Length: 236
Figure (cartoon, one colour):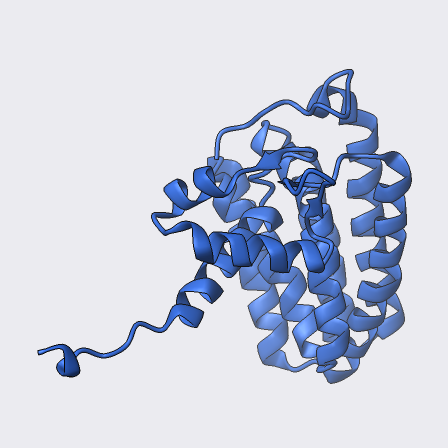
């Protein structure tokens, strides 16, 4: 009987857990500074500890998470210096990708971007947090993938992992203003891409990132509380 069973592909499970945790970081489901426990995550995901441990170690190696001297894993704490360094890098790198995408653009890309942006606006109006964050990510990455620069895309992915806990948590606490403003910048980006105007597309994309970051820094006390090393806890 045993020889009729197919072996379990452990690597596939590990990859699924890794991708789920990545998405959780993208969407701000973990607060900056929050300690993540293998047992808690395994219970939430319905898996054993091993794939969770592997995924956390992988994310720590990518600097999406921080491993402390005591071997615990946590999301990086918020510091204005780190935040603005990441934002400036994002503006430069993502602006480059957007400029390239505008040169490669097709009617299909433009149509897809408009549909995604419309779905983001609809999700904001109905208050579906997951859909808002998902649409925002899909909009940006549809552009970056159109740049056809896989190494650059990998760098952008990592930057989003590291800023997700900051920006995603803002929307989860009921702050929709920066995302609604973002949809207006999105439309300007699409218009420029439609005209193959890489410079203007990149400029509007950078303003989108900058405006959201500026809003965040003005409201960070409300989001994190007075002690930024101990952010307000949120349910997964």
